[in-house]
Length: 540
Image 1 (cartoon, rainbow, N blue to C red):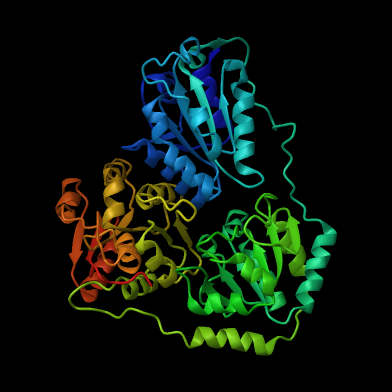
Image 2 (tube, helix red, strand yellow):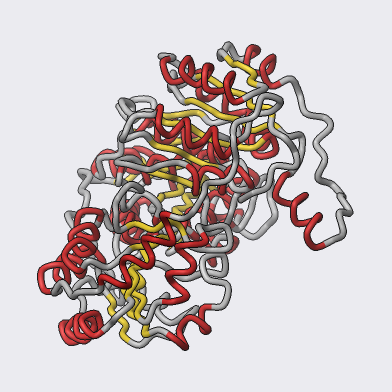
């Protein structure tokens, strides 16, 4: 005999799960009781939303699905923002929730919530398990769905009596998942690839736009080979940062409302745009159809629903980007486009970075550039949405590392738990979380998790006592009527970190920040650097 809870643990072990992030409660206690006997590491977060963010950071750093666990009712509901964040950025996570007894469903009993219904629009799929015999199939399907096609979160809701249910016979975990109706296309259509190659050869001003799908597909080498063999310059969306080293001669930078002006200019002047794993959201291209009117568009994506959703497409290619880019890199011909290459590289060369060192505040843009030179080549930088996200995205020089952020949903409070997950996944790499004072206070409870887990996470706080990006919008669009954007109740962040036993330093100038950054990066354990920032520092 084997219980449903024990089967859940065995399923995770069969999938090679070594770490999960969670917060227990009564409805998930049978699972936790069996987890006690497992070698799977449990990381106790201080709020369930952060369990999903940590699972996301773990997945993005490791390339394997992250797992988060919560109890029924409020525990499960607290996961929702983290699940939605993963869904918008196509991150494979498995969310496991406890649920009340089957016979009590629909009676509004204590801590009941319809979590599968609530998450219907923000998961790839969800399961409400009603028989423990179904658990091996459900878990196998969940991991398969989360990691194939366009990745994303899958929810498994397990009532407490199903966890307690005893099943006869030996435990058997399926070798593969066979799901009718779910057969993601992986191989690009040969005729469409042939059309794309012909369009590339005919183009005079082509540009490659690299999105997060290239990162998720692990297609960095294939993208580099395609760009090198074709000689086509590359721009990226925010989620595509890090595919190409920023010092690469063919990389122009991030596009979008907060991107580099020269990268945006190259897109506007292009006669062919090759979209690779990018949805072309409003922050990347404000008026996509205007771009499509003057340029031919090739769109490569694993998800057919993304192609043509935001921009007219001339040549759609559905399939695995890694496979398609490999094929195109082998077949593409180098075409002489010297005038175009010199023009766009000239735009880049003439750009002067904004922000210079200050003695009365820490200038965040110049400090981020300094910090990037100090960090190791394969370091992971995790940024919270807001001004700190943009400062990091356009000023940090990515080389062989990763840039993680909440690009689709823009979820504040993401960087610390996601950084925690990334640091657990890659314990030998530098991981730095960058956040504003507003975002920090949304997840500062996870400092306790950082301490308990002995994770050497480094945290950089830009403290301007403002919700900086919203205040900037109020200046630009609402005649400077600042409402709800002054954070006059901020705590003493250094003292707060001291209460957790985490060393912290306060910097009031760039010179101090650079000096303390050396200490931060050399520290064996966690470290927090607080940078006093001028509230009037612009986003770009």
